[in-house]
Length: 386
Image 1 (tube, rainbow, N blue to C red):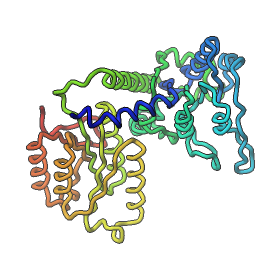
Image 2 (spheres, helix red, strand yellow; image 1 turned 30 degrees about the vertical axis):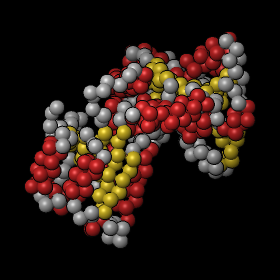
Image 3 (cartoon, helix red, strand yellow; image 1 turned 30 degrees about the horizontal axis):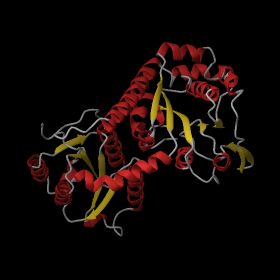
Image 4 (tube, one colour; image 1 turned 90 degrees about the vertical axis):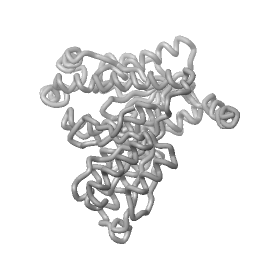
């Protein structure tokens, strides 16, 4: 009966998927591993097989081996946009849509377009191309994945400004990891194949430290492995007895704590390939006319972040945060609740430790896990084990 009920929507999804372009991403642990090079190699292979492939945007970074491969691949001219007293070149989205190649190469997926462009981000341009039936081969580095932002900052000490929502990777039909050992990457850097000579020493002392490269490499390998696991789960029949995971991230108006909970829950939901929701319960003292403007702004930004990462965002008004959470968990068959590490003042607002103990007990009765996400810890704590 369930299959009969879902079949019209499933059929519509199949039709839409057949019209959509295919999407391939080359993922690397850092600049210089050879993503653009591999994209161009694939373009030459497609051309030999009579596939209409063109360059929409390629950034060769003046690397000789990459520039050599650009030759022979048809290019769709970029457009110039006048911005702050000078002309800047951007990918011409409309020109690609008008040309309608079978496949287009679009480098630097995380790039922010110049003000005045149709879309703010290049990944949004790519979505538009896919919707028009044009297949896209693109590239990005692991540090640009939104939910890994805090992890990458801990590893490298650098906060990456240009980021791509995790949902973009989940839309990819294929994600290919371009892998090098730490020694190979450092050798390429020293040989001047990544940056010019005046930047090499600084890079070696900062982003390109061996310990940084090893950790970023591990992240990239895990990301591709997770993507493959999701594809296998989608293709293979579902095992009926496995419970369908549904995550609920409970956030407060605390900006940093909420952002951390959102990103960590996004990673967990992505790993399980499951739906997830962000719930904010507005208590009376946080009404719009009482909450500080900066907290209001941060709250809106965090909700926007959650939506970008693929969450359903729910805001409720209530005198009791705990009752709202419990009710939502029961009504929507939530399997895992993710919360930030409670602080004493926060617990006081919710009637103290008795509230938290009662809440944990109710979740255990419903066979629901609680994961406490501490910003200073990589570990998670479960309220009950299955």
